[in-house]
Image (spheres, rainbow, N blue to C red):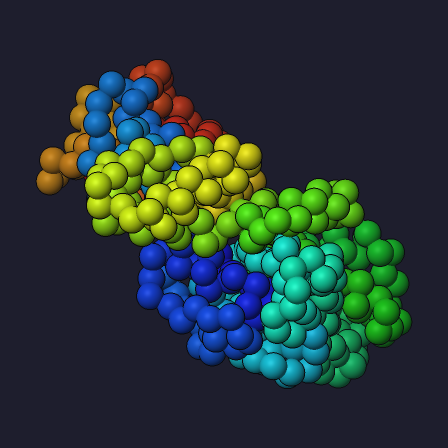
Length: 398
């Protein structure tokens, strides 16, 4: 699974990426600071199963703090998008190519309105962030439309001549975008597309492309720079204007400051929490103390967090509907190296016990006998749909 950070230049996209990954990336207040995509790992937050089992885990990857498990997820930060990107303007062509690998998108919007449509700095609140939400969706839709339209007439004639199943053929044509036959069938029904594929005109193709984009590239809106005076009012307006979207108020700059302070041992901060603990007040300058006080009062007390962790969590668990599953044993939670509950896997919705067995190891799937719910110690069948935070033991013939 890959999450892609998208947005216009200077919206705070690279700061968001750095605050999630702590990777060294170029950050500056001018357009196209990001030229080539940045890749790294963020972490989703999960209430660790170790607390329910009265133990302490020892993760193989990620980490666990106060029984809160942080599970790695791959993230990318691509070049900024400007109007006309689908036509190659700005870094558009590269942006769209890099973007294709993402399962879900995090659209970073400057909710303070202090950058214009090109990513150039302007007076705060002078630019309407609603325009940024609209233009990016248009660019994505036109990108998909261009890919659908490319060679369409020849393709449609071939389908007609060979009397092939339309939904299957279209899905195969767009498989690089993770489009499935079921998705195409639903789009055909939703827009009542003619049975004769040659009658699908440009307007119908655009509708289909838009629908497929929404399904294959679901998007959450990270309303960044919420700490700027007046930005909260903008956020409220966006919530009213885009009720069908998932919007999160956030401050990437504040999250980055808290993580850097934690990294240097100055504070204890668990990402997603609404407070932090100062560990070494004597090492903090007056400027740093004022900055931390500002973050506590204007972000954590007001919004409950900086919002950055919530963006990642909601993208994985609500947008993509993934679940976190722990492999374990009813009588033994350690692996061969003595690590307790070492793994936590992010699995797609409707994952069954058998699916999970194959995910762990092909042989476990091939020789699957049953699975056990470690908490209840009860057996479960191969078709049992796993729930978020399940701890599962796989029993196989080998």
